[in-house]
Image 1 (tube, rainbow, N blue to C red):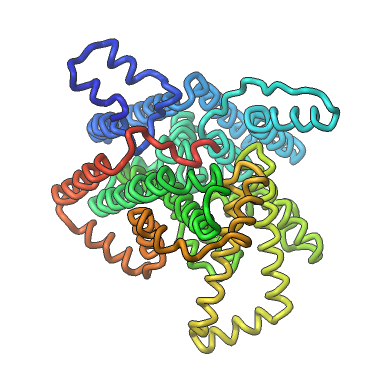
Image 2 (image 1 turned 135 degrees about the vertical axis):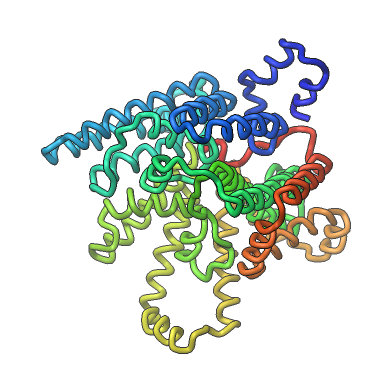
Length: 507
């Protein structure tokens, strides 16, 4: 039980310290018992301090820094250093009168943040690539990646760039800005919350309404179910086995592994976002949705409007548009699109597999735009608006094609090497053996139920989710707490003995 039972065997100060101090193997995650215990105490103190804004801000900042310390140890001081740097640069930006000074401040901020990313995430990749070209041996440097560094650096860059664009005014309250950048719910794995969406809420010192509490608890429950009951279960008992050695399994099993990882990744990542947004709602802060049923998309373009929305819009606003966006020739536009997706792929980590995955996303997006232009997409859309609905068969075909393209691309996202991709493709195309399907279903019955159930819930009408959320929010708080407790008990029964980190914790 991730060491939490140590609390109940007597308050031995050494045991308590072992639980509370940094442990690389046991980060403080939303799906751990330790977080549940600490958060209960946190929320009590938070409610007591709700009327005193500055004390509440300090308390949340300290808790957030501890939350980050539990996953990244002394690197929490890097996070605090970025807060100080952003605050100072923001003040200077607000006072700067010349554009060259403002551009210089943006350059300094980008240099600091991108420099950290290059060192912690890509330095070994760059050195190993150089060593391979020069024929030299290379021993990787012992560089530990701070958790969530990609997320808080993106938030830092967007803050300074938004000031430069005069979309927001510099924050003159250091506590408020530190609260924004260190706020623990989205700190480790998103969503990428922007200053213009949150600082205004911080200034108002909000309190959670009954509706917000209900919505928050509902999202936490959904997130826990996605993460533990679906993602962790199918990962440990099926998907990891396929990707570790695809040649041992038939093509049919490899195909099921591809579809299994697709829903695993969605449930793992969107589950974290659901819990982060839900916890923020309990504290009175509302974030934008980060996922909107992405596998219902009818095109790659629509997929990226529904998948990891905070990242895709960040890349659009701070990478694609500054490159020129659509305000240029078709060739240049396509290059901008490809470069943006390559950057998005590389953002995920120092691996050529991520770069290939990003390149595939660029090809899909460019291909969709070209086909849409070739077949008169604008006239078709106009016709569709007149008819008010498209052919159901065509919609199903669009969803099927888009989903399979995305699922295939995720093989590159998950696979450790091109050899793994080659082995999976070889099994699927040359050793499919559909005849093993009955034995597969019998041997992996619970896996099949989890995967099929997750897809059915995903493709269910969104109005069903809104109805369930509304009904849950209308329940008395005691009943909501009982349902949450039941879900937690179920999770304790089905989860493995070890806590499975969120996939995006490494980014």
